[in-house]
Length: 349
Image (cartoon, rainbow, N blue to C red; front, side, top):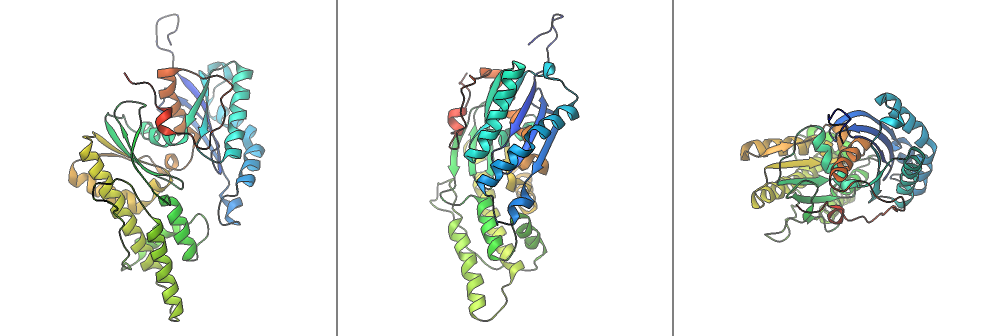
């Protein structure tokens, strides 16, 4: 869009993210400048249950939504008149949680007469990388989160092709289950990461490579192997080597993730490797992938931890891409807990 003087008018998007247990609202300019990014976490609420309770998450979103929107607008120092569009996570995610965000976004779009942009949650994680660096295509993305573990090839901006995915547990889910077996509370990933880095030796655990040419992942067998080690120690009257198990588990996960990601980059002639998702905050994974990419001469982009976990800034970044290519969508858009990343892709050019 241009002003009357012919200058380009900035695209300012108010973005809403409520796919799981974070209520987040952000204001993002031109897809890469974060004017505000407010996150209200529910971790303390769900810790008592050992995981996210969908109905509780939905209620918490309702309780804080208005306040978070107001805080994001105030922190960005913008008014409704300044906004270009309203973006919201359409899916995937918990359906009740998604509905809260979708209803809020539709209400704002209607009240403020702004276009609506339904946005894919994983596309948001991927484009969180654009908040810290310019993306070059084709590129490869390693998505690692509580619900997703995928290798996504992007031939051009906004076009997604999943070349590998988990066949069972996502890596973040496996971390939480292993942490629970080792006696740590939800969320367990940070506890396992910390222990793995402190351990002097690793308990040897299997690597699951699947077929020789496969980019898919599997973590349920590794999780079972951890449980077997813990149970065998207890049956012998011994205290499990919690730190050694954590290190062995993390080394197994990281080796497979790094090796398959590098192989996928080479096979698809990707110019960059992007890391994203909640598990991208894992220090062990970040360090191992950084070291391997330096050795291989691969450009690696990793967002800071605040943009790895669920947040609305990433939704604003992805929504900007959709806005550039397709504009807004009708207000009869519905929340879609099984939303396909590949179908959300923009048209080819």
